Length: 507
Image (cartoon, rainbow, N blue to C red; front, side):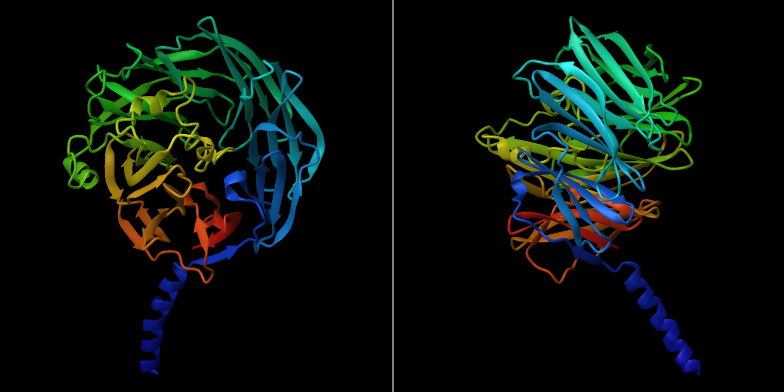
């Protein structure tokens, strides 16, 4: 009997550990829909179904799967116009809201509709706003954001004219009831000033930053936090003291639990160019407007981990902040990634300034949207360019800061990725399980695609798990376009024989 107990005691931990990190992959069916032609949005789990929006040339479809990824429907959306300019989605446990833009007779329409778990409309279509535009204009005018608890949805447009930005906002509830509408005007110098994308607090307050350069092609020398209360036509700016240092590409985040605004960026000692010296962090209390600023010098150990055998001084120069994950106690984790690109025939084409400041209103709208860990509506633009470009997505840098903005720990996940003209299979997907952050990314071995899984614990310890294994062959994964739909579950887009499909991953 004692021997039997001993065997059981030895076997149980082995079985438990193998099931704890067991991977299960279920694939959806694929249609004759070449992935190169499809723009899509994974909406997540709505009711008991998983829903994906797809735009294929002039066709717009909702693909609905059950819990086993068996297709329920893949039907064209009859009420939508053929040519959508853009579409945004706000998902809830039992319904979702679609906000979309289209042009008709020189008028840009922004409409919204509530949809059920089977992707059927609930009630009537709501016209949110209209704007008269030029007949040849095809750009989207409206932006959509929502609060963390999704109780507030903000649709806004910004129009620059005569050194002023006209801002129109309309705020809605989760049932598309109009809560307030505002119009305001703020001064704007398009050669020196940059506005970050808006964020929306749970109480409906708008938050963004205004950054000012002393020269057109210099680093940021001045920073302001700008807020606007619900139903207010007034924007209030609070200056942040940069202590004669310079920053670029701020990442902003609302900490609703602790009633704070968070701002982070890499900083320089020189106004033009120079090497990244460390991390700038600021925290502003939403009630008192009190601001705390810290400049953290990144230590030599982290520099060496990133630089390897390369340039030690410039180790952080290709890092871009991707994610800010807030903890209950006011501390938070930053995730950054090394990124660069090179146009063929022009070895000096990479320019950090152009990448960050190509758009005067938003830095990151061609990569990770600030409110989302996955791509937005149009993800395959790279196929529409005549210029040959090689993309490089390398090491992942993870840094934890306490509530006083002091660095607690840092770690580096080593990876080396590159591809020509298409970066859909590069970078990483992030799964937050609570106890750790899992990073999924592609590694190539003998021209075969391997999906690696490394994680960082809440204490900064690095774990490497077995690569994703599947009985099916011929699937190519796109981890960075995945969406987390459960504590340890992801929906990941895949390509098989050139056609788009989706896989449900359980860990």
